[in-house]
Length: 334
Image 1 (cartoon, rainbow, N blue to C red):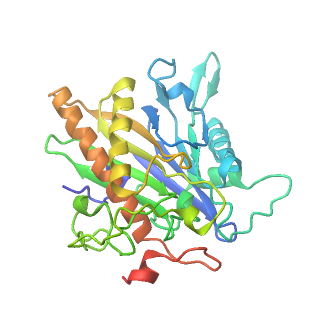
Image 2 (spheres, rainbow, N blue to C red):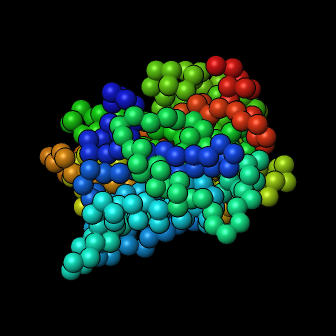
């Protein structure tokens, strides 16, 4: 069943904050655990942009992170992680090294530099300040669509956005997903308004259209941003989370399994021009009793949540002056 908010913050111990600049058409999103969380990552796209990622591999020393940051701005947006790190240091958070604390803040970015926003900064990009602002707004409720890291996101045919979803398993474990959708391909089927993620939809969370019958002849045609000769890069950056107790290796497997949801919701996915990346976090509040059987269920729920979150991010996007593509609602109604 759905969590009470249908957001990643239904996972106990997590908060999320957004900050954006309407003129810039970009922003940042922070996932803040109440306590450092076990985390790992899986990168299946060919063009990722990241900060502090290598330490998330299971064989590396640091087990837990203080925050996760998703941001626009391409490589400039990595400064958002530095802004969050600095603010957390002020608050006394971080990995202890003697008397020193170093906040661990893995960060992933998406390319939104050609979306019509004013990117004319001079000596410094604004992402450090956006990261700090997003951290200071963290809570259990947050906006979807054209907010935070999803502010200026696009897909091949429609405006992208920030999406989230959650699910509570029968064993009491909660799973959630958060995503900024900026894909090379499409989340909708052919030229229709039907979402590839439709089989996973709960209620009418992204329109309740289901799947078209029959599928349109061009359903699996590969239509991407390249068709319009639009320069740039593309990244769908996401995080999945659970309150189940996981080791770092199990968190890695969770991130890998969650990518199935990305591939179910976007066509094509994991291309050489996408930076498709999924973080996985565990807040460790519930200890599953069935071992691998529970892990299978948690991973499947994470994939389902991520597919739903992708569709929700696009469904809730709002228009802005100068957008290079329309929103779903502009084309297909509410």
